Image 1: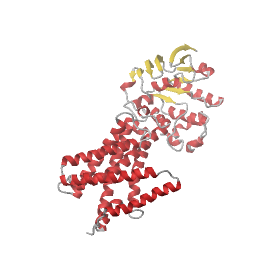
Image 2 (image 1 turned 30 degrees about the horizontal axis):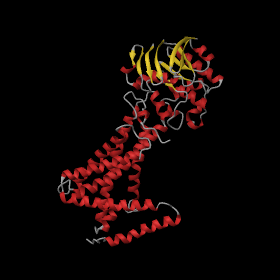
Image 3 (image 1 turned 60 degrees about the vertical axis):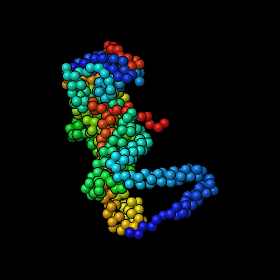
Image 4 (image 1 turned 180 degrees about the vertical axis):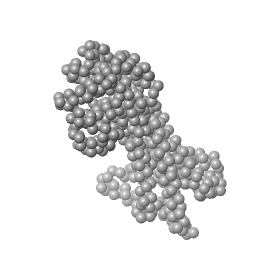
Length: 198
Length: 267
């Protein structure tokens, strides 16, 4: 279980909530209302204050890289640091099944990054993060650049992870998607958060 | 030794060339005649002052005055490093990091050369220590400023990629490895090029100066080789420590990228 207590940073009023194992919470709100700030603060990617624990373990008690492998932030536009797709994976062969599940071509491993479309980048960024098998997925508009079929494939993969006990906080502007995935939502307005049922 | 003294009349004749430059600027409408005149006058005044200061220091052979002169050189060079940064670190780090790394690198290499190879008596004799330090410092300064400039601009440009690695559980050193390697490579490029081109493309200034002062070419060459090795050592040491310090400052103990510690870039 992920527990967030009085988490705050510049542009984000103190936020508190819990996330059960296997649960998905949707995060909604206008652009610039603080949704991404919340996810980045949970992943400890920006200076922040407050207490965040995972299964009772306080994140400050563990090295930040270890925390981020358990509680992984997946940006809307994933970053790439070298030339080809497979160079971004520690074990590309092991990623093959997920790559196919998400509707990507088998041979995309040796494609240069510059050849990838926005949607392909988004799905490969997701595969890259899922290969770490994180306990908590912090998904930032992970289907914003995808067509309906690809978005459905992403939802199927994430739901499978939820059934395996992982949990997710999913920022989405798609109300229907939020209803499909989550029973409750965090609604943002001007950096302030309130919890609501779906 | 064939030493030909240059007289003030010789200098005045050479100055005619600068006056011709000024005339050319006026004739072609380049509008740099004022800058040219100021730069030429500054150069003459500064070098004459340095000549007087060095003459005094060489006569004193005092460890205190030699040390103070060396410190002044390092502090001036530190200012130059800051001036050459497009995105400088905020606060005392802007001046402190480059200056401290240069102080350490240039001091270690200069003292190493003085006590093991050049061996003047006493070891800090300003006739040898100050020119050696000056040459090492000038090049180390260039290396450090290039290294820090490349590091900061790369980190700003590659922010998304670096944060992607951090988000996937990379440590700060892993996430910034490519940026820091590129920064050190850029810092070392001038000395690598200078060594590769020495003698073929250009005759190094110090060697040429010694030859003009009447030293046998082979002796001047040996001195130049020594200086090149010292510069390479000083530049590497300075650039590696400055880039490592830059990586330390641009991240924090929680392995976050801290671009808020950089001054805003030019508009």
